[in-house]
Image (cartoon, rainbow, N blue to C red):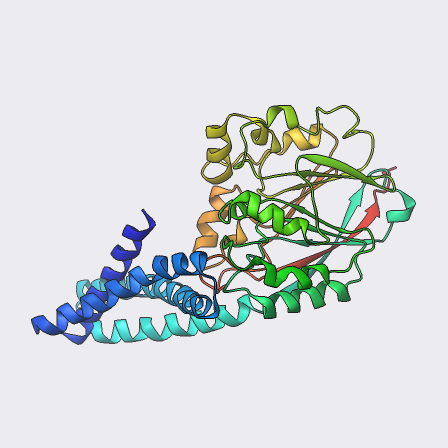
Length: 388
């Protein structure tokens, strides 16, 4: 489980500190061990306290424990490099003192975590153009904004959301599309975000599809809260705005009755001859969304189908996704790029089909980014030019 993994990683940090400081006194070793085990357990306990209470004290403790998680993960990475350097130096006959290796690892981990904290709280605007066949003239040159994985909660609170809203409104978007994980999983303090979410300005509205984290606050609670705002939830449905179709498909976690809700099979919902944008949280082929539950989960996490054949064959022009956070922390992004076949971030074109994977606006877990940038995506729509 995650708690066991936390205990193991903190034990590794403890062993490194004991070796570096040459701690031999039993009482000192036991004290250090208890401190690191307490730090490990503070992470799930702080998360539980925030979920149950959500008051200012619980939010502060949760934020501090989340930052410690990021620092601890960086410590593990740099300490592993330190141990490797120590071992290699002994093999070549020029031993490196373990104390020096651990001290350097601590400095690097702390520096990386501070940079990652700043980076995570200063999202950038990623601007791009996407060509769409048969795009109506009224949409030519218009900008739509994608937000994904904002993860509103104790770590990313009102101050962060206010900054995001100001950045989005400055882009003067035609529409705002939120591709899941707007909420981080706490059901106790959602109302404090209502006025700021209502402050999002877009001429044709703000649209949302669920991600996996909406279920952690209980899906019904998340949806009831969102219904209090101006945000329109698209739950396996289509809308048309002046000739442009928007298809919103929710994350496959929540219901077993999905095959009958496929908007691509519903009469009059989606017309393949018309231009369309698909909102779907994970950067995977959407057909798994309507498969059996086990296939849904495996494809969403461990064996992603990145062919996107279903959407392309259905006539979708642009699919917007998120979920991966582009790895968030180095070196996770390297592994994630391999797992997701290169579709872990950025713009991809497959014939007339275009897919964009946002690296996310917020963060999950540690409020730290050392492997990617937090982003707000501004997409200018263009009519696809016919080739001669």
